[in-house]
Image (cartoon, rainbow, N blue to C red; front, side, top):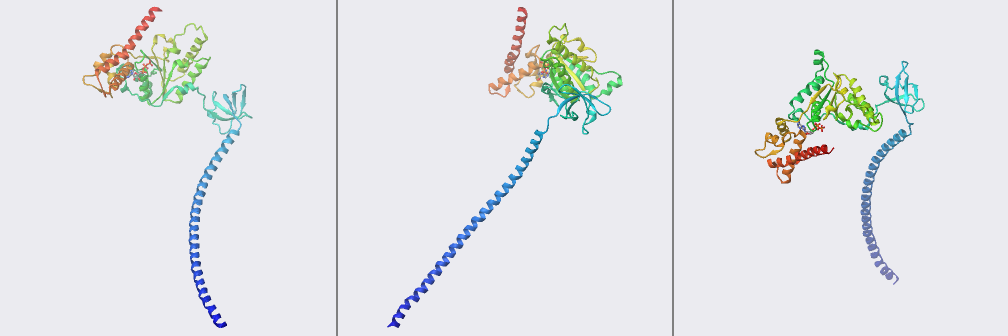
Length: 424
Ligand code: ATP
């Protein structure tokens, strides 16, 4: 009984153990599979994270390099700001033993040494230098000071106006070529003949007749820098300022040589010297004297030429017109009919003109007294009328209205002048 019972008890137990083992085995392998999958997934995540971190590392590396560079620059800047200031002085005399007599910007004169690195040849009276604060020895040569006005002068390295852009001025063009272009291009011609070329050229004529244009064209032809200054700007408020400006402008012209210095409205400083009554008059005179002195210091065969322009040659001081100064007068007159036609051809070159509109008829339409500037304005106005009516082609009627507008204003202006004169 007991044995039966035992067998009976044992049998089911054995089967159960087997099943449990089987079940556990299956679960275990599922468990392992899950575990492997989870680990693979984690591995993938970690690989991705590694890649991201590597990228970040590279970016940080680059940032680091950039910041180190910036740090170096900032340190250099701080170093620069910490260096003590240098004092500005002007050389008065260079002594034979290598020392220099100078005037510091604070006033007193000193005899000092110059640093080895300073070019001795540049230590000439008048040069501007930087001085060590303690020993006042010269540590560097500074460029000469220039007034902002001088920098404000119109300086064109190569003007874009050629002789072909000037109409109806055959005589002035020929004369200016002889007086300015030839001495600059072939100075030996004058040396051979044994004469001095004109030193300065004065262009005179009514406003808007192309005097500036002519000076620019010569500068272009001679490959010279064109420096344009209006003389009225030389008349300054403070005593001695105008004369200093003149000196600096001539200095600028020498530095930019070959150059053409064009002084417009010369009468603003060059008007006849009567008894100067106010300090303002005396200041204008001082400016004129400086201009004369600068012109005297120039060589006529040098590569700096001076061209001046005025609408009132009759007002000029005779000292300006003496030989060695503005000794060549060139008249730039109002253009005649042929001249006006030539100027129309230049300014209407790019315009589409209707049939029957030609330069000669336009020149007659513009009338006597029309200047080059008027003709340019007439062409622009006629073009504007055409644009207003949505056309590309400019008709005769547009020119008629343009002449009325441009010349009409001029006529009214002249009538007003006559009236004002009558009431004066
Ligand atoms: P201002 O005496 O008022 O200084 P200006 O005589 O120097 O006058 P410019 O400034 O040379 O005259 O001329 C003004 C404009 O008129 C020029 O830009 C040019 O377009 C035109 N012009 C004048 N004269 C001529 C000309 N002979 N041929 C072609 N264009 C001209």
